[in-house]
Length: 150
Picture (cartoon, rainbow, N blue to C red):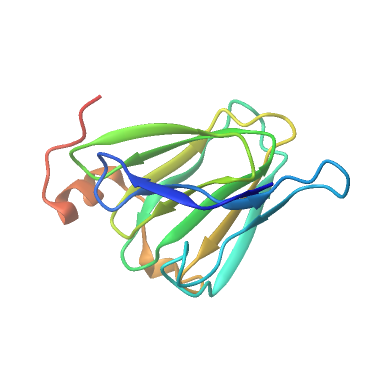
């Protein structure tokens, strides 16, 4: 059975949620696909995985000036919090068919990792330390807001 991609916006500026195109095959196994120009609005220049994260630890906790990211929990689960300085939402990434597009100038953090979580991140740019905004107050100044609602 083939399921086509469905996407929707959320209240955080530019963030999009995707239920990715996937094939359910009880005999041969399942497959999930994302393509540049369809689901991905950028050609990935970098990918990385986070895994073996202690459940009480938080990853991310930054925004990017120019880099966009697409996050999918390939195995297990973790929670993604996104914040544009005015709106904040949290999502449970718990299946390889669910992805979240995080555009530049959106604060993102990942927490509540299951012991078996493997988070796949596709990035629009190569690693550039100067692209990172790691201080939340600086982020708020850059986006020109007083802070997201709790």
